[in-house]
Length: 79
Image (tube, rainbow, N blue to C red; front, top):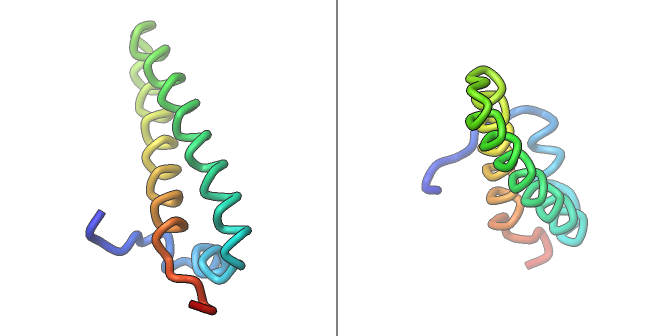
């Protein structure tokens, strides 16, 4: 992704990026797992023709992916 995620401009987003590398890696892993589960929920909602829930879970998946990507690409402060 070749852009700056606007979530990272929020105070909480900046705080995430300031965490130690090991903490960011753990959160990244959780975000990637959340993305996978949200995608499963989205597909279930789509099959059941539940449009609003499909959109909700797809958005959850997208934000989780964006955060995981941001956490995985930040250079470590001590690097």
